[in-house]
Length: 434
Image 1 (tube, one colour):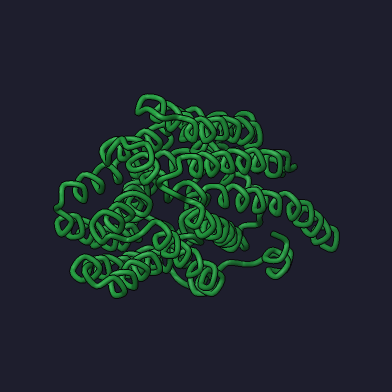
Image 2 (cartoon, one colour; image 1 turned 90 degrees about the horizontal axis):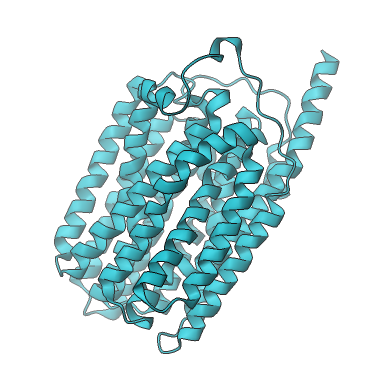
């Protein structure tokens, strides 16, 4: 028994270093993303003068790049491990980000956006697989929550700094931002891509010879229902966060880019302040309840957006309402961060962890591709009340689907069964290590 305990401690200590590097790489990349993502719409629409339709297409192409790479990404992770996939993805994303900052025409911007998106989305399932392999099951929710906190902290700081640098009259200011993004993506590859990730768990005898790839996913009804719910979540929240809501704030409400940066910073600050507190609550609650609660909070965000649209002639009141929208989005995101990653890991067979993470990422990216197109179209055409009504309706559907998913999960998958915690590294060490 003593020997078993020592082996567990040694395995956990070895995992601490890789997990720490993965978290730092995530935060570094997020800082660069905060510089650029919130201002891609402004860059294409106003700086390059190509209009809101071209700006919406850039977001759509960025997300649709996932369709080209993610089906191969999951297979590559399962066969060769997450590190090679992460290194290739980071290199492609860095090249795309740099090219985006240099591009001046719609075709070159779309081509750079595709390269940028393909590399960026390939990194996501690789990083998720690294976190799962580098953390014990009992501490996995906290590992994903800490990742989300660090990512949002990096993006928030990047957005705040970037918002003060952006000058619509000076295209060079945007070019510098995208160059910084390329450098941080290279940093992601150097820090996280060179970590020594623990080997995959051995495949159980019962799992050998079973269906693989899409056949395995198609046979997993719980995963299919989760993917539908995730698609709606990312269409309604994340697909609007940097496009539809940003367009609504700047074009309809008249929010300045610097103020938009403050609002995005408020989102990140909300997550940083609440995340580790929220994870303590979600650890003792059903995951489906946490997802439904996120939907309830987002209904409040859309209500605040309605207030911003109605009082847009009052600058101070409209600004407060826009900041409230992003802050409430942050509360909902905090509820989801310790939920989505662990539930995918619990649903996935060990031999198909990369495939399940890639499918999860693919669904998210498709939703993010469709979301900006719908959001920018409705806001750009002046039908912003219809836009807010449609998003509120989608949010109500999120709540419904989350509660109905409960009947298709085991108690362990829904976090309803008591978890026997093995001797692992203290939580404080995990939090401070990153």
